[in-house]
Image 1 (cartoon, helix red, strand yellow):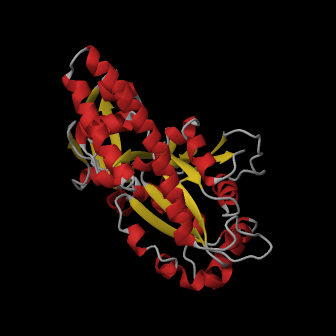
Image 2 (cartoon, helix red, strand yellow; image 1 turned 180 degrees about the vertical axis):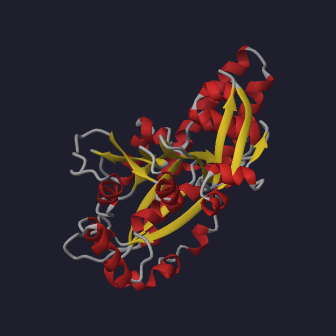
Image 3 (tube, rainbow, N blue to C red; image 1 turned 120 degrees about the vertical axis):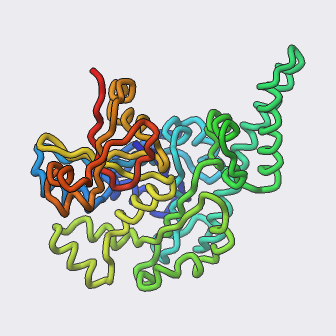
Length: 362
């Protein structure tokens, strides 16, 4: 399951977004300390809907994204530091920064004015400062350990962390380093906040909904968006609240009137999925049609492990057919008869939209 942590300044709409995407009935309660509220959202996928209609299974199981919200802390600095002590944020695959762009005199902005670019930079600085403290403390421990005995592994870690400190001291987030391989794996072990991919959720004013596609430019965030692993998605939380209270037919008609093809909440979930480079493959049958989340470029044997570790260990072959071919033919047997269902080995790279049956030893 993908995990995303919601961050944002007070009165940005962060907690409202959490309630909307997770269908939480009540807002998280402040407790005076950093507590995480966790909820799960289903990834919208028309392909799964159509295969469910085809197979009429007893269960339909979509891919999911876990969202975490934090309550009980005030101020950006306190909040960013507090995230380091909250497991759902340390373990998050990405951070979603809810940025206020709506204007509402009845909901004053803590800084006195609405300025999205200022808020984005301020939050980024807080994440950087929080990470800098972690990196400096680890470097101090490394120096002590290296005095006791030289180690190539510790030396390499020290080199990477020196690079991290230089970037952080220059005001650059660690995601900008674009580390790969063992270096990236080493950094993941520290669960540093500014190393995580970042999605800006631009919470628009209702009057600006027609200009949603230009939201990044209107906010003056073009330069910020040029950074690595950084995306943006515009929504209007006020409108989303109204849509969430309607039945499906009325919601569709309302969105059509607004010129929206899908809800902003679906766009947030899809953008989170895309930001992390995840894809979906499917397993289908009369018992269950299910979407599985895996990173792009995952080999078949590892994808099998998402279902169950025993399937990965006993992997023999993967029976693979494209989603489009299965819908066109109507049955797996027809796809096999037309040569569209093929056998693949452990090293096959699973593609988005693959429908797979794994053969495995028991």
